[in-house]
Image 1: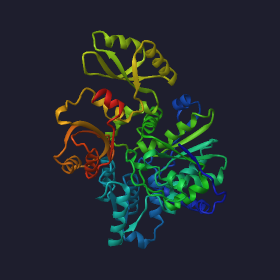
Image 2: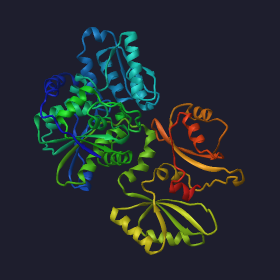
Image 3: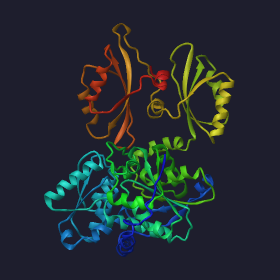
Image 4: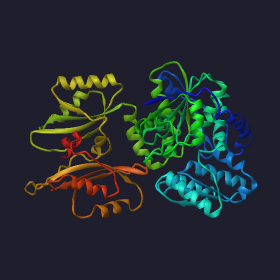
Length: 518
């Protein structure tokens, strides 16, 4: 999805940032580097455009956040510094604040969600900050930080909604223009909007022809919602896989600047982000965190429509949670639209596998899942790596010609998140009791005691016939649950699940479930 922004044509809000960014230069380099720009050669060839990466992943804290945090704290009055600093963050802003306070010898307190990645917690501790863990997301941590700030008189440093923070991030924009490369478009990740506001304020007023494009993840697109509604919107829920941009409401100062200076905002999904992590690694040998690859994911979508252009994405962070690597590797092929998932029916007799394998020829088979279900036919779930959409179309044509019945599950969430890890089990329910199995897909919080808490709320009146859950290193993981239902009133189970505190969607008619698990 792309949303073009009808700019105001004035610089009422952004004009003041020219001076603020110039002033910020005097102090940000106490803790930051003028990060290099890398020409992504492999990606440039693949995308038929000249693609560059602004390497904020090489900062001392492996994120751009040290710029804004230090600029804000450095410009506080001595009195406010003496009170001590408090901030709320899922990780990168916390490191920026902790580094600034260590450099300036100021007391530092950080409120971090209980879901904050362990590597970021450890980094903040090493920098000498005192940590309070509270809430499941940044919004809850912010409320707690504000409460502590008022109670103990600490000076609060906001992660993005502050002119000095925005100006500190704006030094990235000044450096981009000093590269000497004539960019056609710059892509910037969006969480609360601090980096996008800072970069766009400088670039728009110095190089009006450069397109400035913000990129959001679809499960935390607070800027898109604000622009649609022409006001700041508080999202009820945000996904935290890309925790560095998992923000429920864009900043007020940030939105004012964005409306004046940014051309459009676009949305990417998690699979596309995973593919961008892989691309950054292949060109730099650096493992980006998911939020650090968001801008490149947007650039890649944009580049499909053009060629020969100079495009830059801000690689904004490399504080990756190691637990996420398996999931990123698995989903990167889907994000590239290279791996396809097919359910294919074959005769249940010797030689069927070999015959099907010959159909694939030299195509790379990434996985092959099967278990005998009856004596006549079998369904196999096959992962195929294709070189292009055209080669996949040819494969499907070949399967049809040979009279194979198949379904494309590439975009089936149940298949991608669960089925490919659990093919083979089928429910054997007592038909005399009138039981049926109902399947629900939901999100499960990844925190100590979460499973026990859910099961206690679920109780003992319903029998669980299937359960699958995978930890992907995020704050929430997808779960698939099967429940035996004997009631004629099907709303009773729905009402019972609503009391569990976990949001579920019924998937009893999902074709992947019907083919392999029912």
